[in-house]
Image (cartoon, rainbow, N blue to C red; front, side):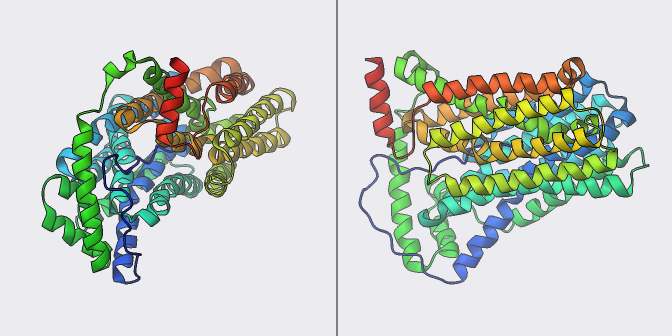
Length: 482
């Protein structure tokens, strides 16, 4: 699963420069910060589990609910449509209610959607329940990273925010593992998919109970004029000297943000040529994140493996490898991200993705049905997942965080995230029908062609954002349109 962006909490122009904060001191406050991080990342875990569980649950659901290829796509993509809406709505909701209360509300939504999906007697009930779950997924994709970034000290912000990215892919791997165990143990039970979906409720309860005991974001409290409460929260997760110094810094940043807010723009900015080009590039980055078909593999991997010749139980177990390589690929990408330029890592990753697609298509077309074809397709599927998660799946979100000047950042990232979820929903919704129409080989040839376009986009359109300041990028785009 490709993960959503970790929204930046940038230093704001106009805030005091050159102020040095005291170093982080060891103590119980760091353990408290770790506990907060673990509890909040249950939101990321739910994100991963809820998007991955359909992979193993869909096949028995098809038989039990009488799904067609079209309604298979509808059941899968309804979550993604809900996520697109949830991502749009929850940013403002978190600004109004606070990060903590929003996460508590999302936990309730996760639980309600999970239980509704478990008891759904028909497609007509399943689709709105999946849509409800999707709204929780989209809301978590926006709220959890912001909450973590606003509580983390500057020196640890990247590492703490990165834990949410890891929680998402671990959640998806957990879904694949649990699906395999449940699918093998209750393989003869027609409602086995309901047991798979029921597990979603467990981390939802953990998130709800845990967040009731967690503090609010100090930045949000200061923005509401609740300075004493903000200081109390900072003292929970910092030593006293650091808490007082950080309070002053955050106070100044909040004041500077208020001044900046008047200069922020939305749709009207698209009339400015250089802004329009930058926003379109951002949308392009979000779209290529989906064109490889990574989420189609994550949602329909078990079915793909069955169509390649694996039996039901073996397909469930082999699909776990996709989850393992997703985690491994993400970890490799995190190690490479500061050592290789963004464009080079993307170009290498896309080349590997295209090669994997072509090999999947070739194996599906020329190897006779049997164990040999099944193993070959599975091998190139996990290779594709590894290439994707170590490059495109990780870097697209990093680039979006680096691409936009502050005054258009919120609008541009929000628009890009919306397109990401929308394209995800379109590809995932039509994937079963496309495979039924042109086969696995034709489908992956189509993905290979789309990724050639992605490679050309990166090679000739996308600017290098590593080691480039936002001011430098803005100046370059202004000059290019002059």
